[in-house]
Each structure stands twice: as C-alpha cells, then as structure tokens.
Length: 312
Image 1 (cartoon, one colour):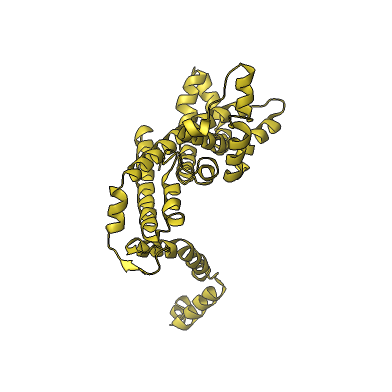
Image 2 (cartoon, one colour; image 1 turned 60 degrees about the horizontal axis):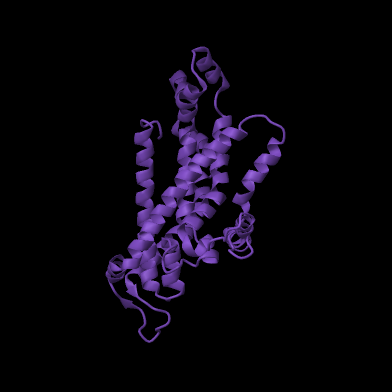
C-alpha cells in the first residue's frame, strides 16, 4: 500500500503543482487584450461608423435636412454616375501600370546594386531617397521645379533644343501622376527585392553553375523562385499604397482637368470635403474597401497561378 501511495501522488499535491505553474506562467492571454482592443478601436470602429453613415442621407451644408435613412440609394447614385466609372478606370490604370513598372524597375535596380562596386553605399542612398520624401513635397517639387512649362527643368531642356515644353499636368495629367508614383515607389520595391537577392544561397548558385546552368537559367530557375515571397510582399504593400495615392494628386492636378486624374481616394475627398456629402462619401469608402479586397485576391491568385502555386 505504501509503495502504491508513493508512486501515485494524491490530488492535493497535483493541484498544488499546477497552481504553482499557473502562478509563475506568463499571462499571455491578458497581455493580448490591450493590442486587440486597440486594433478594434482604430480599424473596426471607424469602419462600422462608415457602414452606418453609408446608408444615411447627410449633407453638412444642409443641416435643415438632418440625417435621414437612405438605404442603398447612396450606392446606387454613385454606381450610376458617369464620373464614377471614369474614376474607376483611372484608378485601375494608375494602379496596375505603376505597380508593374515599379516591380520591373525595382528588380532591375536590385540586380544592379546586389554586387560590390566603388560607392555602393552612396548609390543605394541616392536611389532610396525618393521613398522618404513626403508625397505632398514630392508633388510640389515635380510641379514647380521639374514640369513647369515656363521655368521648370523640362522647359530648360526643351529650350536647349529650340522647342517649347508642353504643359505636362494639363495635357497628360494621369501619365504625369503615374511617373511621379513610379519615381517615389520604385525604391521601396528595390529594397524588398534586394533583401531577397542577398538571401539567395550561394551554394545553390555554385551547384547550378557546376551543372552547366547559364546566368539566365540561374536567374529563371533559382533566383526568381526564391524571390516569390518577396514579390508577394512588395506587390501587396505597393498595391495598397499606390491605390490610395492622394497627396501627389492634391498638390499637382487636384484631380483635373475635370476628372482626368482623379482616383477613387481623391474622388472620396471631393464628395466628402468639397461637396460635404457624408453619406455618399461613406458609401464610396465602403466600395473602395470592397474593390481593394477583390483586387488583392485577384493579384494573389494570379501570382500563385503564374508561379505554379509556390506562394503560400
């Protein structure tokens, strides 16, 4: 009996051991609650308020009408307007073209900088510099110092060859905004892809070289598969940031002429802070969230299908 009692401790001892373990174990669940509450307060509460106002008819300039329930009429009015489809087309073209060119240019710059040469640190710093400039500041610099048809840098270059600089922001507003976004976001893509290139296994490259693979074959079969996750991260963050471009448009073209350079984000600003139509602006915000989610899902589906499901 005594041997059995020694081999099988009683329940009180087991409970005491468990209580001591729980007493000294870190309170993981309690530490998570502040971050969960903060995330909900910052993201979900504003979105729920946007959903609420999207079904209301509320114009700040008409306080006599008050806030009246409108159902889905705000969504119908926005989708039924001609300018919405023009703005949607501008957003799609601006986002897709800028994203593709940023990816290609970023990969090219990353390949150039992924080698040892004199002044590599200075070259990297100069290439990264546009990414750290505020969007409004970069827009002002491009508008006043580079693209101004009278005293900008482009006017100086055209005068050297006896020509007249065109009004870039007036004649080619969307293309100019696109160039500005590519100039600003290419360094970000270069940073992400350069980090991926520097983590490529040199042993794997040497093994492929010994097997007779050329530089192009190494790049296609070794480097690109390794960069897939980095491409996915860069595409995700770049898609969200480029699609939400606002400062560059605000200080350069203000969405004009007409709606020629207006994207969905600036269109929301026009509805909410120029027309003071909070109901329609909130409805457009909900539409933007839905379209962004759909576009992200399509992008990931394309990447996974294009690269044989190696992304996860």
